[in-house]
Length: 232
Image (cartoon, rainbow, N blue to C red):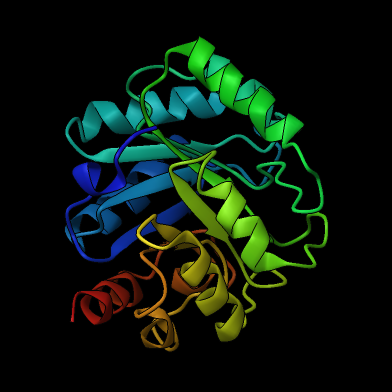
């Protein structure tokens, strides 16, 4: 396990999520996030780009911002396969489904993922999706989150759909369960609602609410506003 606070010393962490399309567009959005004092960024492809090409995009961003934290989300790979497709420069991996099943006596799938991570030798932060949008329904989020904190660095949840704010009570319950371990919200956060979650979440992965309408490009004013609110 990697220590989240050693990587990110700020009380709250903001990681804008770049919807990767082209090299120019990706670098432009990374520059906006960096200039707005974001703690880092995640790269994700919503257009079917495979993980090999997304990793090349990651290398390009790291070449430009060598000391800045840059993570990826490989939508084309099952979680157990992501770790063998990373390199040491990848700061973090975010997987929508960490395969935590609160009704199982033994977490056989999460154990397999943990083994794959260990075997890979990769040392970055693992953001694992729990009670996450478009995944299996979780009936007991408190139990699921309490289990999950032992299998990932950052328990990561979301609202019910893209752009949908998560239920505040759900976030409070999950934070109670993870305790001092970090909890991230990866969907539904905006400059307008982030204040509601500052007491019960440690990290915010944000894309949709920061985009210019009809594009995959950040609105610099919204990125800056979000980060200013989070920093207080």
